[in-house]
Length: 166
Image (cartoon, rainbow, N blue to C red):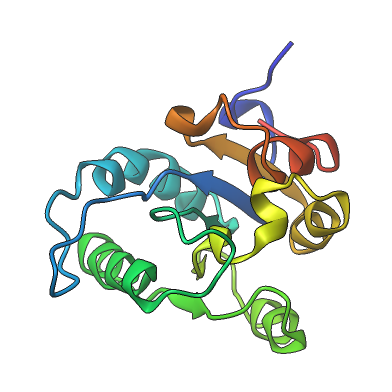
């Protein structure tokens, strides 16, 4: 039986929340349609209101495992911060040791956004070690990226086998 958010105690726990922020951007990197961000707000707000330490994970576009500034989640971070009226910690590189240090400072009810998960080739390869790295960042996994549910990627499939989830 799959659990829902209300089935788990997230108070004080780090929650890796896989969302779908694959939003269209204009040529000047402005968000054209923020519906996918807005659709994730109820889950994010629930977690924040229940004192979770929220770590958002998403992809944007198809960068093929390469860093591409035109597919950065920075515009999403800015829009999400405005919608929630609170700062969002932006994590540039999930593989950098500074990532763990930064997330250690994340307080209850605070939010971090990982840079585009598809900047790592291991994501689309469903790499077990990469999934372990993602899982090491959190205590609980929540999947809220239903448009990507059919993909067998590290952040949508493998990590769910490593953490308690809802």
